[in-house]
Length: 364
Image 1: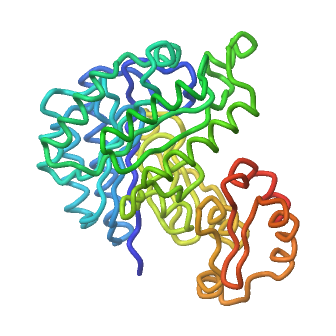
Image 2 (image 1 turned 90 degrees about the vertical axis):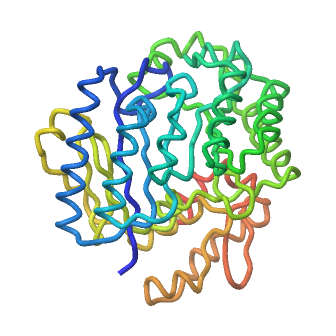
């Protein structure tokens, strides 16, 4: 049986960014320590229940680095013991919420990949995103990562934020490239209901859709020239540094998510924990979320990847030929430069990535 991916949601932040709708709260040190105990107990329960090994571990949030190096190291060591994790181990970090010896401490426990929230190196843009670190602090955190022996660093940037232009985006991208980090995740700002940004959405000075699309295509070209492969809609990596944990999501592979708001896909079933830390800490059962992993879902997720759908892999997974009617539907998108098709695969192009949702909806 294939190895699963293991995700641990850490629902703590110093402050809530005005655009973010992920489940998080402030919490104090005792809240965080209690939560770590609850996560360990949950890992113990699921390890015994599933009897499965995991080959990736991802601590996301929230701000996992707020737990402190000692707590993160404890979680990682227990995950390795219980699930035999021996592959990619990622921890998300906010540059302004990291202890000085954090990277050294977590590296000693086996963490080998850090995802660092940059968003922008332009001070005005960062402030409007609710980010408190500056360029110098980000540089310092990257240096600390490298000094701890962690060179697999992913930098998050955002497109379409307030007052952003192609010139300011290029400045942020130049900074990311010059750090030597081998992975960049680039997300378009989405105004989510229930966030402060949503409440004042009419007054935000955001680039329009065309400007943001131009930034996206220019970014892809710039990163490509500098040795990054645009391997997924929002992700770029130097060869060999693609995010292995997230690739499980996009390939309909199995994963276990623990913590409030965390989702799982095991044995063809999807389930999740509610956005309620008390529910999780009091051993609440995950909520069933239906079947998962069917042909339609596989097509939808795989088309997020540069490689798209490889017919041979589809046939091996589902024991049937890839639908000819879908291949036929791709023809007009190929003619418009939005998709590419060979006798072995179909995939979206860079321009197609920008219109992925309506294209996929029409195909399936």
